[in-house]
Length: 288
Image (cartoon, rainbow, N blue to C red; front, top):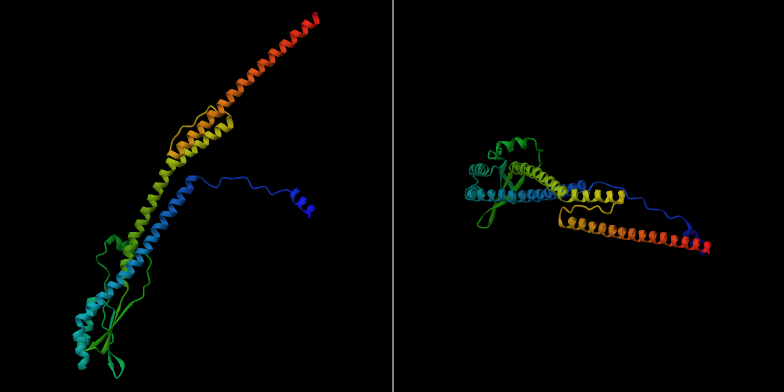
């Protein structure tokens, strides 16, 4: 065991690899700021798109409920009298008010639902309120597949169910709203990228460049051994304080070197004087 431990101690230890530069601070700061800005904007866009989707679908349901309430009396009266012409008129009115692609009215007959009106829908047109530049930009956006919205309500008379109405809404209005929002979000992303680059440039000028000049001064001192040099304090308070501390260090080293040089000269003069004294004493001894 002791031999193994001595062998392990005597084995050459693996030396750590020397430090190598992995990239400038300015480039890293620019990447960090750009990534943070993009992530913040993308998260905001995603959350806003989800909120817009839920809000728009809720508003579409509310429009359907309002339209059904307007035609409820006509539909229930039609279903109770087995005159289906009024149900078709009511379905077309609901389709016109809501922009539904299909409106179906069912009647309870012996416990089962029988269709009264199968289809009575109209496709909602393209949103004409969208500005022309947004429509052009939306033409380059990918199609967003969205499921249709089905809204079903029960029709009753005196709390007795007599039928059911189903309204099918197209997702095109929602897709148009999302497309318009994505166009605006794309512009926001471009502005965020421009702002991030501007911030990175400002940080480079105020932080990175002063640190780079301080490093250059350190390299000059290390190469020339001239401790009388001084760096110019600049940049934020922390970098300026670092430069002042570096200058103080250079002053102490320079003062110590001056003191050592003075002691060295005094020692050399003392050695020379003692040597001359020994030489005089030797000559006097020879004469005597």
